[in-house]
Image (cartoon, rainbow, N blue to C red; front, side, top):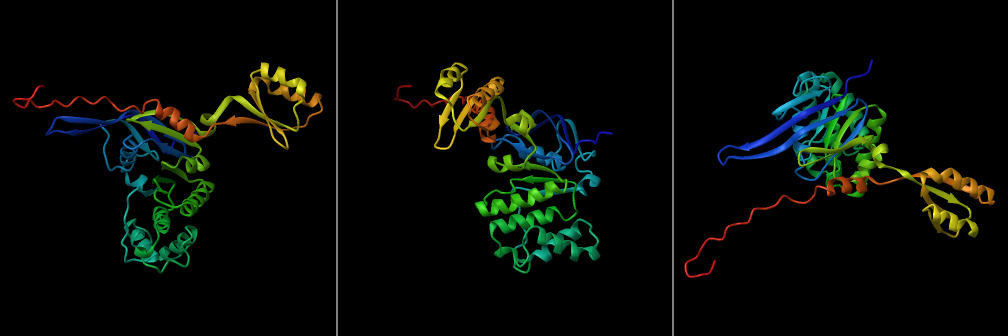
Length: 327
């Protein structure tokens, strides 16, 4: 039996209305996607694309105008789902005069946790997020990276099935980003489902299984990261040598090559890779590697979002007439 998705969005619409001025802004327009259980899914898009609105609807903070939404097979906001969700918003603030133990005990109590289990659970979480030795330090003395890590510990208090993380590495230096990324790798290995919004595409590419790209309230692209980044029709062959007599033949196949001191790098259409490898072997050259070329997530993002990046036309502002001046 196939497990139900962790997150289901079906034809979701959301419009913000300013009734006093008669203005409407469409935040989500027929948005549909799914996130399977155990996946790490990146939710990408520029500012104002609809990411925060989508996350707010998932968490039950906002209501959609139309569409079907299921979270862990429940309606958004259902306490049965919330008990299995760990949430880390982009902008959060903790009581700066508490230390890690007191802060996590407070949130554990808010979540209805068993007080007898709190001490061991909190100790394990502090160790998991690498704050051992800093647990008696007040939160107000923490670095930005340490605050992010205690935020992750808070999100993990209920041992959730689903983690919803909005910009978890925002504002961190490279060392801080690596610390948070290592935690997410560990959570992925435990089989947690992670729904992750981030602008740091290189970080996303390293950890995510699936990508959803949204802009102006519409899903522009979605799929597994391997499928989306595979170029499909180009292959790199690294060989020990390229005999001069093969060069014209390779060029006729639209292949390109680059010689280095140790080897030759050849890029060709995938359809010709076997033929070229056999020619190289027959000529006495060693074929060191054959690798399908893969684009980067940044390249994909710019191709998809860049195609719709032009701002909407702005209506000209009428210049008021001033007596005695030409208009």
